[in-house]
Length: 65
Image 1 (cartoon, rainbow, N blue to C red):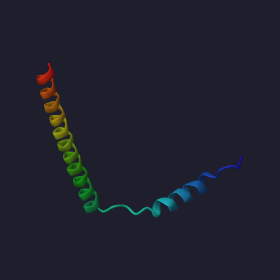
Image 2: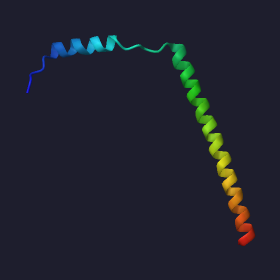
Image 3: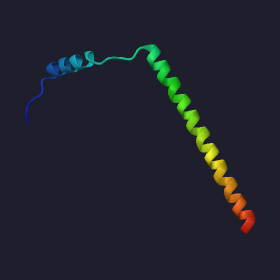
Image 4: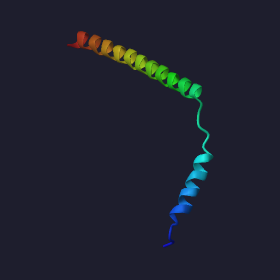
């Protein structure tokens, strides 16, 4: 097994971190807002689907029950 030089490892880590392109504050804000909007749309969609299924089953139970 090869020995690992801690100093060389830290240098390599710092070199890799310097290559990272960090998002701007505006990009973070926009993507966060988009996530909240998509979550709200998904919640509304599933609420409507749930309502339709519940109404359909209530109708079926009303007819046969």
